[in-house]
Length: 130
Image (cartoon, rainbow, N blue to C red; front, side, top):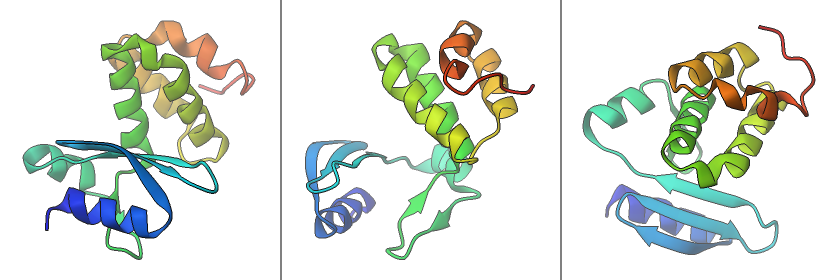
């Protein structure tokens, strides 16, 4: 059983509907809470790098760190600007929850040449310390 198929089965058993299933990606929506979960499935060096500090949940499913998630979202924005508002909202939530620090966000905004998004990202969070 592939890792992707196993994750899909667990999510569906928890009440999620699979909206999209493609090689390396899946999208799920919880029928009651409307919580959306996107799955990205990687192997090799990419997996080793992303999951080196990950921990499994009670179902044995590994998730990347909040910092890696934020970096992937910014990289996705760099490659597809139509994702900007949705992914910036997710990053704002990670900052609000204390899962990532504003300084980490600033680092990746500079790394991916997205510094122009800084005002949009932090307008609702107030002045973020640097």
